[in-house]
Length: 255
Image (cartoon, rainbow, N blue to C red):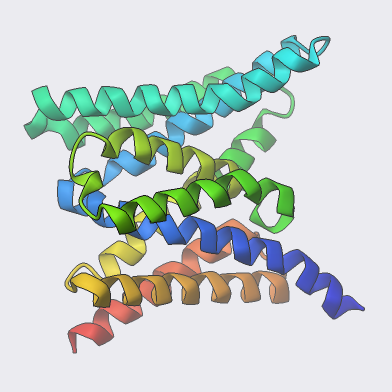
């Protein structure tokens, strides 16, 4: 009975991780190509800030269920798309200083979240949830929109492989990152975007994609298994496991 209960908890988490990794490898390789590594962390943090603002509005609109629902759905996307638009504009006019500016955007967003939640008695809990996610407690209904959106994204990439080379990259990136942050948190979003992409950065073509997906899946499964065996936090365990697997792959592939 215990084993079936564990499987029932782990299976949605595994599927959620696969949904996230399926799109993030492609996006992560584009991030490395453009040299804007901190962009994913900044956009994820901005999306989390949007979720925090939505939470505050929800509390103030507790008497209006429709208003609270609209805020919780719309706000993270509005913030992340606005942040992506700002970075796209900066990429045109401040290219040499772009990475430093993006780092500043991330720090300011993180500080703003702390300030926004300073008077909330459950502020630390909400901040921890935004950063670490709650992958082990996801239900199947949480994956419907991210799953369909990821399928549409991958279909578009298959039809037009170079579609992300232009400015469309920024709004698409904001959309996918925001959906992922709601499921798995800022830390795992950043890790899934950068670590597998770095692990296979010296490879190209189908070999890079295949190796990247296998590396990401191995880190995901290892993290989930260790989390279930030792009762570790799911998101943090996957991040560390993914880092170990990606470093090992990079070292062994060079040899």
